[in-house]
Image (cartoon, rainbow, N blue to C red; front, side, top):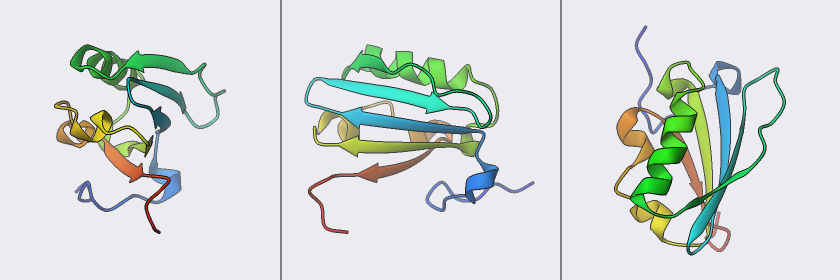
Length: 103
């Protein structure tokens, strides 16, 4: 099976994990859901390589193909988009949203 480009989202039914991340200046809060299961309790991470690595490890531990996980980032801070550990580099699909950007 050929996977789509990371820049082209899959249909919603193809995702095995949905992740929401709200990024602030120094921290980020994340929660996720596997279809058919309850939403996880939100976790707070520091916006640092260690914080991002911790989140990445927790998301990868949910199983399934990285390309079948959708991460939606709401970023009012800037560090998340500048993080050295880019989720797309390991095959995770990310949609970035800045609340002050025009649609």
